[in-house]
Every structure is written in C-alpha cells, then in structure tokens.
Image 1 (tube, one colour):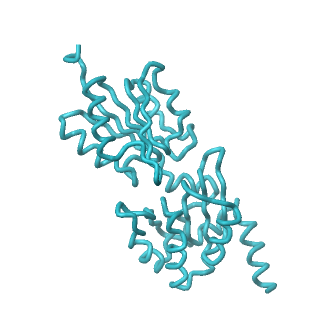
Image 2 (image 1 turned 135 degrees about the vertical axis):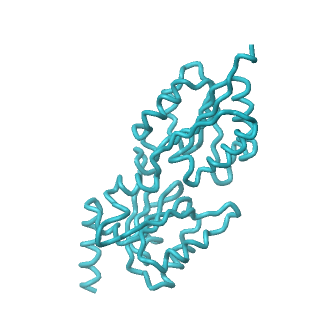
Image 3 (image 1 turned 90 degrees about the vertical axis):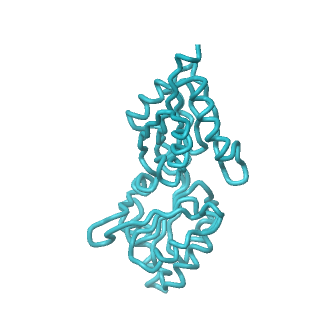
Length: 258
C-alpha cells in the first residue's frame, strides 16, 4: 500500500490570526491534506478547512513551553509525509518571515520529498494595518525594518540599535521580553517622543492595544498588562493612524499645558 503514497509537503502561511486572512490557496492546500502540523500562532479555526479525517498534530513553540524542538518537528514532517502522503505544515503569519520555513524546506528536500510554499499575510504589515497604521507613508516614512526582538541565541538583535538611529518605521516581532532594552536604545538616540504602538494578539477577537511614546510605553504596557504575542511599532506613522490620532492630539495638548 505504501508504495502508492507520493509524499508531498506544503508550507502554508496561516496569516496574522484572523482566520479570514488565510489565503484561498492556503485553504485549497488544507482541503487536500492527509496530515496537518500546526503552530501556536496559527488560529485553530483554520483547521476546519482540512478534511475531517485528516490527522492534526500541534507542534507549537512558546517561550518555556515547547511541544517539540525544531529538529523533532522537521523529522515529524518527513515521517508523516512518507507514511501518509500529503502533509500541510501550517505556520503563523508567513512561513519565510521569522518562521524558520526555509530550514524546514531544506530538511524535507534532503529526503527527495516535493515541497510547495504558500505565502501568508505577514503580521509585520497586517497587524499595524488593523490599527490604521500604514508602516510606510509618503512624506512620513520611506521604508520599514522588520526585526526579530529575540535572536536564536536569545539575545536582542543588533539591528535594533541601528534602526533606532534612522527615521524608518521599526516593526519588532517577538520583542516583548526585551522591551526595556529596546526602549533604552531609542532613548539613547534622543527619541523619547517617538510614537509607539504595541498590539497584542493582532487581528483576533483578543486584540489589545497600547499606544504612547518611547518615554511612556513601559508604563502603558504595565497598566494595560500587555504581553506576548505582540508586535511593537515605533515610528511617526503611528501618530498618523486615524484610529490612534485622538490619543496623540490629547497627549500633545497635555504636554503643552505642562
């Protein structure tokens, strides 16, 4: 029986959290899956697109709580493809933006297994957009940097210090545990008044938002009890959001009164 099985792995980007932000191509790939391996950041509602009899395996990684190591996940993908044929690896956001998708592809292809990548809507752009933040805007920001807050050796990316020196919009993923260090780098560059937005569980019903400036955001995070998973956006574009404009107008008027 196993001789007729043609192993194939499709890496599908699940999008930023809202199940409606899965692509049509992603939904079609899921509909053909025999096995789905899914992440902590992939909304479980999306699993409804897979056939009822498809095997579903949770392989999520959260800080301090790893269901599987990356090596184990790689091996699981290969084993399931060889045993059952069509495997969908469902990853939050886009598989190739801080998702270790390329590492998984390299491992799978070393076994001669066919792979396909279905890009996902990245939370880098979608989560700020859900709050009306356009991460580039003519006359305000010509570019953006997407940076991982925590590198593979658990340190803060050195790119944050470089980004703090420039006028770009800075979007930091997986940075909440390093927020005091991030803020310190921006303060060293005299960016205390730079607007900051922190969006937790963006695009989902559990979304929570905190807005302020480099100087005030740590207090706001404490007050609103914001934590991971969250996206940190630093830049003048935050002030331009029609959803957040009111806060900054009020904030500035209070500063002037002082």
